Amino acid sequence: MSEGTHVLVLNAGSSSVKYQLIDMLDGSRRAAGLVERIGEGGGRLVHTPHDGERREQVQVFADHSAALKAVAEELAADGLGLDSPELVAIGHRVVHGGQRFTAPTLITDEVVAEVRRLIPVAPLHNPANITGIEVARALRPDLPQVAVFDTAFHATLPEHAARYAIDRAVADEHRVRRYGFHGTSHQYVSRATARLLGRDPAEVNVIVLHLGNGASASAVAGGVCVETSMGLTPLEGLVMGTRSGDVDPGLVFHLHRVGGMTVDEIDDLLNRRSGLLGLCGDNDMREIMRRAEEGDPDARLAFDAYVHRLRKYLGAYYAVLGRVDAIAFTAGVGENAAPVRAAACAGLEELGIELDPELNSVRSGAARIVSPPYARVAVAVVPTDEELEIAQQAFALVRAA
Image (spheres, rainbow, N blue to C red):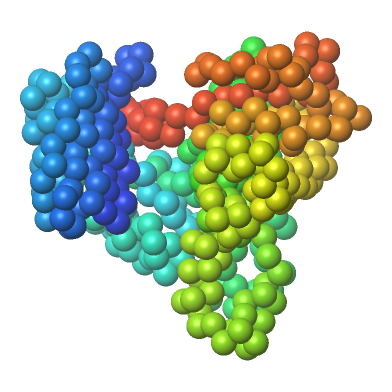
């Protein structure tokens, strides 16, 4: 195969495409960008080369094919087109891989067909991921393309953690089990945390807290995920920006029978009108913290509910692991909201968890320890890099092929 070192990472959404071109020699970004409002009026492409000025174009992108062709033109303008000999693979983020896809996978017609069969368990994400794959394969049918699945890192959950306690025949017929999501982030951050400690990932137990608008936790024992907060769908677990996280399943029946709500209305409520937004009318943690500081009771309730759920999972995952070497905060809230980190760890000194207030208050884009040197459990802030994780997995697979 080519001795090139570039991997193009694509993350196709229903009306958007995010992309990064990464040089695997040093992990640097050669280019990055976003196409949004695909299939709508006023589409926009923002492209940023690694050593140049950001370029923006506003036009109608009729479909993903038109969007990716425009991306190819932007890359070509930088001498990095899809026909470049430096490009050795395209890595695709695919949200749901079910039980079959537990590792990065070379994309074939059979793989696409299986990802399509998984649409019922990922109706919001897999169709868009498939569209991105099909368009990219049409543009470069000769180039290896690799699917990297959000669920794959969590495929190591022991059966007693992955199973819901419902009738097994029903569960098996409808593929009902806990799959987990944000897997590329949890995998990257758990390894990066071990490196930060100067230790082999196989020796380190880490609780990873991926706190963005979507939020999830994982317990990683020696590099292997043994528990995670999201389940059959990304709705389970922590309080999120617009998602409820854990609720009594009976809530659904109550809202239907007593509230007269349809299944679609309940789905919309729990996924798009709940979480922080549902509690205080805002899903931006920066704004919530500002409002809470000014005495807004709704914002204070939202902040406290968010932190309470986070602390419950911290304690639960400490018990699951038995020994915790590090807690890693990542993603937008985890990396930037020092008060969230402080509140989550407050009063846990008996568990060996403690923050250094001065270190915790420092804003930095670098991975860092924010606990005092004597703390038994290291508390770290580790910026996630899902695109680099996808590129590394895709590159390793095509190199080994």
